[in-house]
Amino acid sequence: MTAATLKDVLQPAIAGHYAVAGLVVLGWEDAEAYVAAAEDAQLPLILQAGPGCRKHTPVSILGRMFRHLADRAKVPVVCHIDHALHYDECAEAVDHGFTSLMIDGSALPLKDNIALTQKVVALAHRHGLSVEGEVGAVGYEGRGGSTMTSPEEAQLFERETGIDALAISVGNVHLQTSHAAVIDRELLQRIEAVTTVPLVLHGGSGILPDGRRRLAQETRVKKFNIGTELRQEFGRSLRAHLDAHPAEFDRIKILSGTIEPMRMLAAKIIRDLGP
Image (cartoon, rainbow, N blue to C red; front, side, top):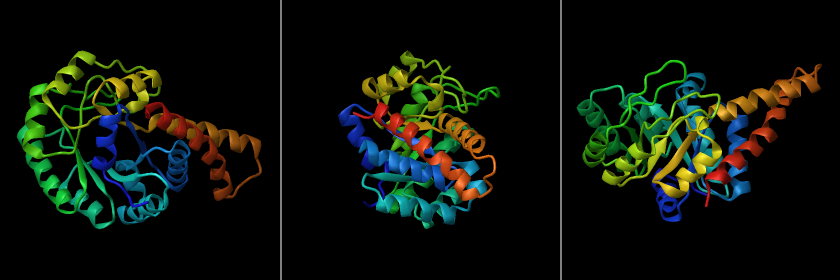
């Protein structure tokens, strides 16, 4: 199946009252497990290469890896750059086969965020690709940095940029290791009232699975970014494999012990958000 864009998978999610998982990739093993999980669930998937992943592996390699998996998958798979801060990062992603770009200008003044996002949208749409932008700021557990999204700014940002999806801050926080997030449903409702595009919640690991499911069914949040929850499972399964095979030293064999647990958890996450 040909790699998909955000518009390809999120617009049907609006009509069907469900959401799509944006799963954070750190290497081949988890990316392979996530695609297998999506095929198990028979639902679409968004593979995400964030800043940490891109620092570890060149975008040129990640683009080929993501497209290799997406083009052979039995379900739609979006090849997505997460939290790009600069236009050049997005241009590089386009050159290497990514089908979706997240430009994060949330740390900029609103007018500069709009100008940067407009430039990325023009690039992406010229190539038939999709763009996610962000208004407000989603902080990090223990480090703060959150700024709740203003509905008025969200409305202006959508109108001026032509984005395909909008990341918002309504109580969600990056890197939460427990389901401690408290989503401000009243603020979310106000944002929904003045915008039209699919909404995105980063920090999905911090939201209870039942909460994610209700939001998927009841609101226009159609993409949940989930990484920490899966990284925790990777750590657990890796330690269990090493405990069970103390003499093992081959990297491929050691990491193979994480694939099935990661696939099973990813499949549950994808199904819980699905129709």
